[in-house]
Image 1 (tube, one colour):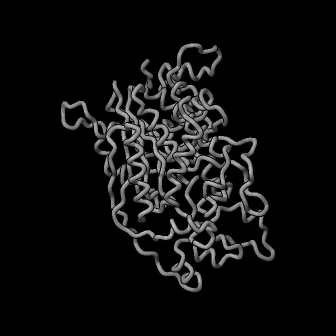
Image 2 (tube, one colour):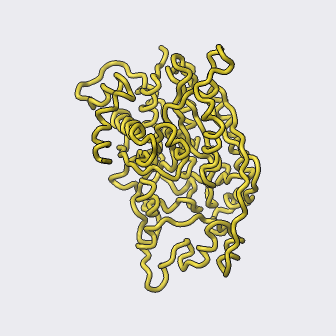
Image 3 (tube, one colour):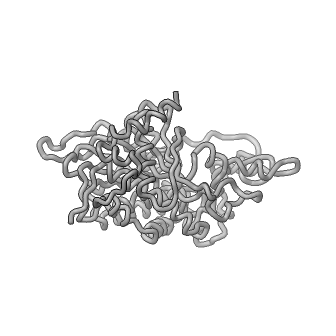
Length: 422
């Protein structure tokens, strides 16, 4: 059944993309010499601007939710979006009041109380990374193929300045996240949602998880907000908060906004505070496709020769067929517009902010690796670790992220009917 669905997807892309999709699906059999406004927009993406946006987020450390550094990052994001001219910049406000953790017995409980989630497991593990088996009789290579737990040990961050920024613990209470809108000229009541989460954990700078995805959203917002750019349909840009605590920011958005979709407020005004959702695209961990960790459990120094972008949909969702078609539309856009890395499509989207949308609208995620098989297998040893800092990554890593931005720009530019005024 799954293979049949995938085989039918390429034949159905014109349903999503219209005549533009038909031309794209033909895969360049004939040279296209006509002016392509979407290619113009993709060409405005710039590696240094992308890196600088990531650096702007990294200045706030790991941006852990419920801290001043998180709130300062939210303020910075809002100021940046306003400086781009993005329309209707606003905040989603919600409460995050988790239940206190259940007490645990033994030595692990004391360690957990001191360090937070995962600390007890680390204390009981010979390798200090929440996994058993690295002591006598264990296999380092085997255990390093399992994802590390969240680092909650401040002393594992060797950079004293980063350690100081991340020192304040999280407290429950009010949370905010920033959104803005590019209003469509022909169909302002329809939109695609483009997201990335701005919060992180692990005592690093949350550069890959997920400044790399948030910077894609912000760079797309910057370019689509340029005064010479028009789109037939609207685009929502969302910088989610509280992803690391269970997708709480994205869930709050769905809870507050789903019922508002497509409603003209006030009636007759031609204004739609929440246009109808046509699709949701999440960007989460965009830069590391180095393969499995080296024998000492570290990140291999270079992207692997087979490095690619993983476009995922949830085969179990109510919108699986349409989400699959959307995923393949993004793959075709990668074929046409991306300059460095190819894309693959997989059916196992999970553990990211597109999850709350997946049964309501076609939803996909773009990632550096498959979430379960690869990231879950510790193919990114920086995940939730103090090594998720700017100095870990090279331009090849940042280029993988920028290629994802090209992919999304190309696909969304076609889906919303992007135009550049001359």
